[in-house]
Length: 413
Image (cartoon, rainbow, N blue to C red; front, side, top):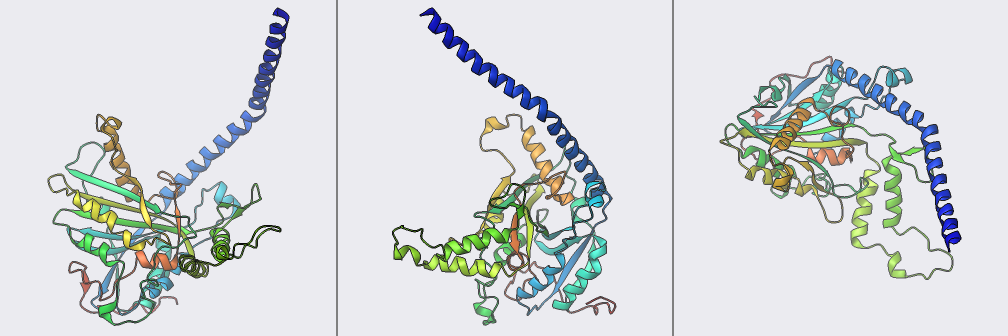
């Protein structure tokens, strides 16, 4: 009996010894690789932060005339200028920290005064203005002061309160949201029958009182091959690969396997499948962007209205559809349970991070990089950010009485 137990002990010890030896061998061989990887990532982050801090930015305010008779489709043409996909050379990327250009499409309300902005680097200003004037010749463009610097909100002591939230898609990227095409705005129906999905957002923004502010920024950059390619270790695919695969599934193009019982009803696409497949097919023809969406509500503490928050979140619902895609909150200020932040310090830090991230327009890269970026095509972007026509009757939406000046004659087209 003792001999049997000893044999069992020796066998167990042998297995454990082999496991420990294998673990030590793994650590011995691979920890230098892990160390080099961490050093390399730290170096890249450092160089990219230096690159970002050296960038110049400007904020363009878009002032609209009383009448805009262009559909959101005109906005699609304008958005194509933001597809700046130059990756940079090897030296630029890995030594200088070069990053592709990104932009911020913004709507802000100051006590109910709703305004539109575009944030860009100065070298693209002329091209952006040319594209805007080509589609909206009566619009006025001017350089504006960054409105985020006028709020006395700081890390420690402030008389202002803040709520912030970021949004994500409810389904995979290849499912589009409900766009202006689905609302029929690509056609020219009578004005009284038009439904602009941006109107609820403008109503919420225009409905706040003196001292309150709502900020919305949609950060965009050209998308690339960042998805793992099926059947490969290192190759990357773009969003269209997944979209085409989903499209084939929706259209029931996958043939049954040999010997498999065929259910004819399962091979017939449903009405919902047809709606989704038509929308995906339309998306495949469009330019696409990596996107991040962030909203902030700020007000003095004695005027802070929690009801505005529900309106802000609700204003994204009209872009959603049961059979397509939509938006839902990703991260928001606050905690579910009181014991998660007994002292309140975590909430203070969280609020500051939301404010600082918005002010820096940081989403894709440090210091506030997010993994949950999503993809929108120009059609989808033109739905959630476009210059509203007459159907948007929000009284506090600032409009100019007439065209104040002709577009510069030296703009490139």
